[in-house]
Length: 136
Image (cartoon, rainbow, N blue to C red; front, side):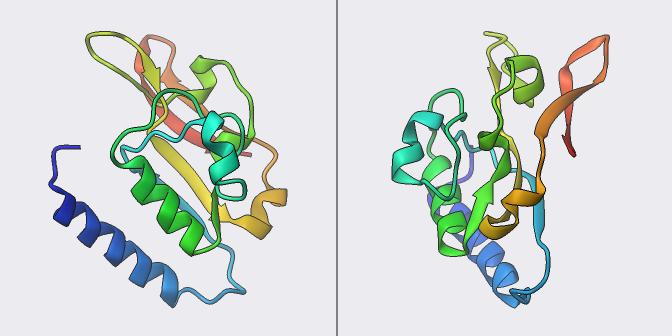
């Protein structure tokens, strides 16, 4: 979030170059912390890129991520499964303790049918603000 727009654009251009090199026939799963918030009520604007279950408020990185996914025929699997915050969110704000999803599992639109679930899981019961992504 602290990087300037030019640095973010360079990152997404590098990501685009990398995605362009992957043959269309190959399975593709991208796991990353994009520091972007995608929100389910924006589903109508990005119907194949995201599902109806994004939570929170969009931030400045959201459109960069959604645009790149749309450009490459990718979808954000996390937003297609409706879970309580403890299984959905991968980060908790230090002061407000507000849970947020920033870590995504992204795949090709046509491969979404292979996903039964994408959810965040706590690493340990005692650490409520550490999460990992698990794909079933």
